[in-house]
Length: 421
Image (cartoon, rainbow, N blue to C red):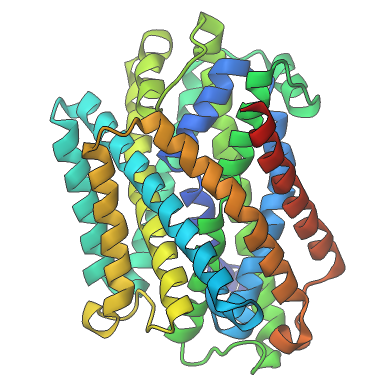
């Protein structure tokens, strides 16, 4: 390999970020609970779902990143140019509610996992984790904060490490990957849950907004609609970043599902309520070190996902209202934007202290995500097809085909949820 190619490759790796962080944030504690439940309940039988979701998830995230980088504006602002204000307001409100519930469930799981490791109060740890996340967003500039988020993705390797401690029947693993199988009505609901937790609306808003942040942070970069000469390298970087990020996300999900199938399901444990319970259940069958890795992974993924959940809600609300938005701004320059971040995080803490059943909270956040994903994906697809919005950079036919396929799959998931619940 020539020196020029090596330098070009290094430069490309250094520019990775929005796609990697978005993919990693998808494996949040509520996602871990869903993948653990799928492995415990169905063994290796539902591994195929994650092969199916990868191309659909990657296409949707590519579209969201494409819109942000080309137009220099986030999804909510672009949707506001196409749809009536009340429609956008309703979608944003649903996103805020779903994200807040998800934040509360994630923080509760982090507190429980921390309590299992340290013996401290789970409520106290929940508050501590929430405050750490909030303070990082408020007072750390985006270019440094993004670096922190990228490093946090390393905690997800804990789930690959767990596989080293369990015995695997590789024939069953391969069969579960390539042969679609649904054994019961409850498994259908689990499939819907896997789809809903993997293809989530907050990830669309986050990745699009981070592409806008990247443009605003670099004075030599511009929205592609204004600077077509930058398109070739930037679109290649987005494709590379997103495909790797989504592959990483789905591989982690596979590792979780395989680990819980090989341990919990194999030992008759078929019901997992929370991500923390999954970690606790692993200890007697996979050892204390596997339990510790799984627990620390829950805390790390929560620290990664909570700011993404709160931040995506703030971008959506702020853009729809015409506020100044962006993590690069200090709090006093974007009061409304940071106010939404603070409100979402603090309401998440309140959910942990409320009598709301965490499992119901996870279920209803998944339902909301599944429901609002469909119109948001349709809106994104209509935006990315319009020359008025995208200029010469409308999405390619293969990307549109996969994008519409994702919308149809999610629509079918919503119908299935209504029928089989």
